[in-house]
Structures are given as structure tokens and as C-alpha cells.
Length: 138
Image 1 (cartoon, rainbow, N blue to C red):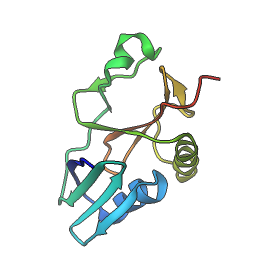
Image 2: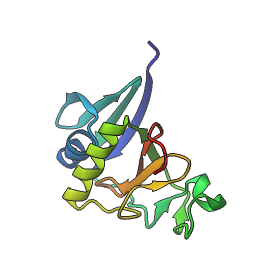
Image 3: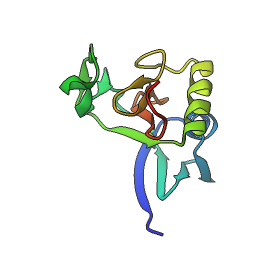
């Protein structure tokens, strides 16, 4: 099996563990004082602790939003973002946990853009789009 690796930074290992592991539901691979990693299918997502990071001032640019798939598209920046496709049950679980935790959301409920999308900010302000590409539009 091929594996993709993504290397990111965070300012708080504990908050990153709770967000990506506890709320989004990614599988924890390792958890150290200075770095943490998760696996999702064939992707390994690793975070190294940094003393500080520049927090984005707005949502990350997503091509579909500005090209008509999202009415009232938000102001965006050209900054990094993460998109994670989840199975329907995992998507519903993550949405419920993130809403319950009071995580900042682009819209209060998942929305349809050719697939179900729920967009949030991680503890360092990075845009994270959770998707459910399998469930039909209601």
C-alpha cells in the first residue's frame, strides 16, 4: 500500500490530539511531547510543535467556493488547508463532536457542494474541510 505523508505544525500538541483524534476521528500513530501523527487510510498526517504560528485571518481559499458552488462565499486567503474525506457514519460523528465542542465553523450545518462539506478551523486556525463524498444530497 502506498502512503502519503503530510507534515504540518501546531502550537499545542494536546489541542491537536483532541481535535484530529478525539473530534475528527483520525487514528493516532504516535504521540510525543514535540510531535504527534495520525493516519487516515493511506495518509499519515504529522504535526511538529512550534512556539508560534501565524494564525490565518480568514478561511483558506477553496476553488469551488469562489466559482459558484457556495453562495455567499466567504472572504478567503491563499493559505494552506486540509480536506479529509470520511465515510458517512464517521462524517456524522465528527460533525456532532465538533459542533458539541464549539469549534469555529464556516456554516452551522454541513452543506452540499457536489458532496457534503463541513468546514471548521483547527486549534491553530487552519481551515479543515471534512467531506462525505458517499451520501446523496437530501
